[in-house]
Image 1 (cartoon, rainbow, N blue to C red):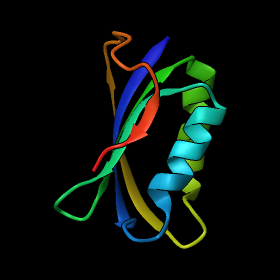
Image 2: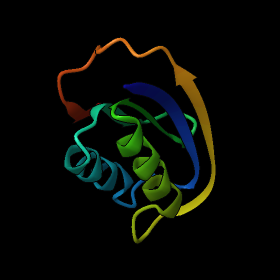
Image 3: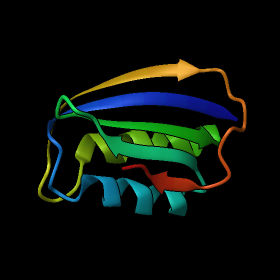
Image 4: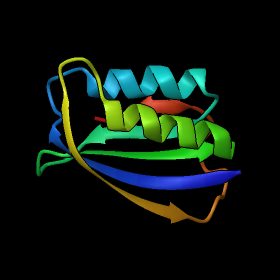
Length: 90
C-alpha cells in the first residue's frame, strides 16, 4: 500500500477536475481527498494499492476534458490508512 500527496497546477479549477479525480479514484479503489487550494491549484491525497496510484497519476496528468494540466508535484508520504473513502473537500 502506498500514499501520495499531489499539487496540480494549470487550468485546474472550475473545469470538473475534482469530480474527474473522485470518480476515477473510487474506480481504482483509492481513498483520500481532493480539494481546490486558495492559490488556484488542486490538491489531492491518494492511499491504496501502488498500481492504482500509478494509474491515478497517469489520469491526473491527462486531466478532465476542460482542464489544462501544466505541472504535478508529487510527494510520497508514509501510508497510514487514514481515510475510509475518497471525498471532495470544500
